[in-house]
Image (tube, rainbow, N blue to C red; front, side, top):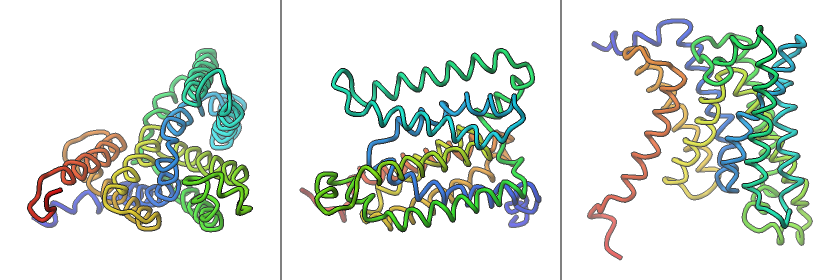
Length: 277
């Protein structure tokens, strides 16, 4: 019985997918918590699809898709940052406009390139079971970079998230912190997309961090909880996809979202030990 349950994880490509998913959970936990705390979820979603023009151009020119994705994502982040103080419309509107514009440009480029059209499904949905050793090294490198930057800028990020005015009076340079945070989001999404596609990349960025905020309060604890939830979703998702013959990446993302709703439901249950208000 136990042998049957562990059967999927005896296969080499599933083992690589498991390690890749755990590394992705670590990278996304360090960035996703800030995304949730600052209300940047829509930007993360828009960025995940707004990378298409850069990926398409890089593929057509024979360049590195990760670099192309990063350039597009950074361009979108810069555009949102430039329009954030507009009096004519709010930040959500600027994100929506840039999202539609970047995605439209990407689709136009793809429509003129027969060679790239076959890769569009991989861009959107990816294939976590196709992770290679080089992808694992890329994720590990991105994780080290994100962890180092997040550690150095933890205090400025904290002040920027909860009290930007006080951050400025304390000399914490919130404008610089905002640019660095955008850079972390750009790196995270570009690397994650290149390995697992935009669906799992965005799902792992948002769902575990949102779920972690239901069970922890201090940010370091939230990040640790987000990592553990993301890693758990990876294990369960791969196990379910093996026996149910479903898409592995989508299954992992669905499990992560499912964990969020289970925790949310548990918080709202009228359990006896919660007491009465």
